Amino acid sequence: NLPKLLHPTKDIILVSCGLNHCLFLKNDGDILGIGDNQLGQISLGENIKKVSLPVVIMNRPRTKSICCGYY
Image 1 (cartoon, rainbow, N blue to C red):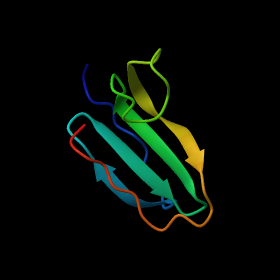
Image 2: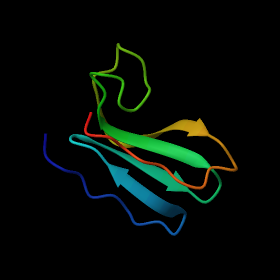
Image 3: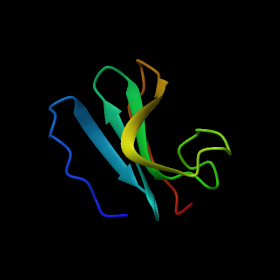
Image 4: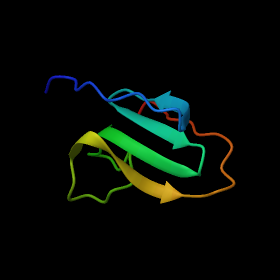
């Protein structure tokens, strides 16, 4: 799959990337995920293997940081 250009947003305050996945933290607490999910990297269950556009995977208004591991 080819990378897709996303429109920049001031709402994203932190980005963390693993081997083939990324998480984005928005200032309202939404955590978005994109990329490989074969091992549950972006918490979408085992039926979804890959995500090409960011999807909201969690909303925790008090989240201050996110971090991805290799897988």
